[in-house]
Amino acid sequence: MDAALGRQVGVVIIGGAAAAVHYGIDLGTHDIDTWTSIQEELARAVEQARTGTGLPLPFAKSGVADGPYDFESRLERALPHLQRLVVQVPEKHDQALMKVIRGYEHDLDGIEAIHRRSPLELETLLKRYRDEMGAVVGAPRRLRGQLLALVDRLFPERVEAVARQL
Image (cartoon, rainbow, N blue to C red):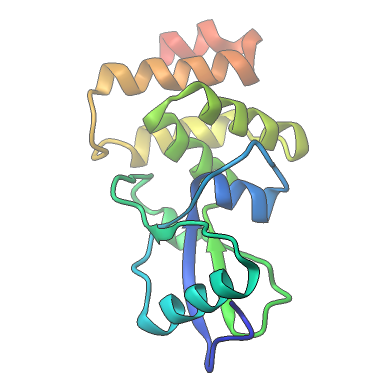
């Protein structure tokens, strides 16, 4: 895709693809979800890459995605060796909270894998949850329960104290 672009084009990748390209976590993903809209030039480059590789991997703006209020200010560059394609991904705590919103088992597996490679800080997760997750779509009780499930996986010795705080 990078070679097919005529100028610098940016994209924010989220989900399993972000975990794979930036954090080295390969739990299997069947698509590349983006936070940003796909610019016309990038769409052409994606199509050229599909044709050249024979890989029909879906690459599209996620229809359903939410995250911490200010996560875009903390995006990190992934694949910095690329010349024209500027790939950004959510910072690991934001990535974790984005996955907590959905709360599927494989999402929690991915967060746990990121935590093993680059430990998350519980205080950062909790601060962003309290300060930036109030407007996400979904039932607050459910979100709280999914966050506690994550805390139980990553910080089991702290889950009871966190439950009392929330």
